[in-house]
Length: 283
Image 1 (cartoon, rainbow, N blue to C red):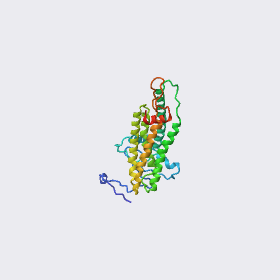
Image 2: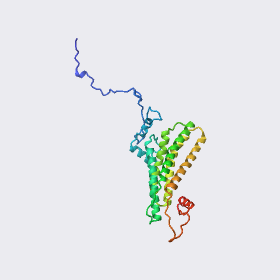
Image 3: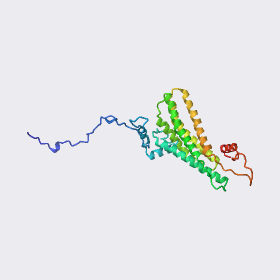
Image 4: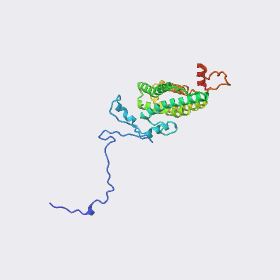
């Protein structure tokens, strides 16, 4: 056996032209799936799970989202000109906490507004009894509208053959649309009727526009043209919810008597009808 000597200068001197290429597809052998990310968001659009939809493990990935992502999505709902205004939302963590926070905010702000109105109307009153019934009303109203309506709409669209929208996206869009009502509820503590009406109008416009821009493209996918009649129906329901927020939670006004010992005027709470008129007109 003999060995042929190899000189060092016979080795390859330039290896810069060497490059390695991967001929593997986007899916690896392990079954991993590539995901796309929304600009500015850290939550992937595509989620993969092997659990059945009736199990808790199926919904676990939709709660795996960081706080910065949720805050960014909430903030973008207030900016119609934002590039991420209509970005797909695929989490349930944010909508759940938005709805829950709104319930607590409605009750606390309403109670504070009622106590302020009671104090300004009768400074000599010793205490004010809070109406805890409003808390149960807020829970029923917010969860019914924020969760029930998107689920019903999704079922109806599925029945009509529109499958481009998932139930997670429907609930997520409706949940984030309620974020604007949190600052509105806080500002409605101000005991000025016209300011409250303006704030409720702004909340109705921003949340309604957000819902319209996300729901209308989905509804137009249906072959039946009559399906577009759902838009005015949803607007009417949304307006009814906004008016309910105003009347039930921020219908407290300062009541003043004219002259010492004078009889109160109609509409200042002396009669049930007068109280309703006072709450609706803000007198």
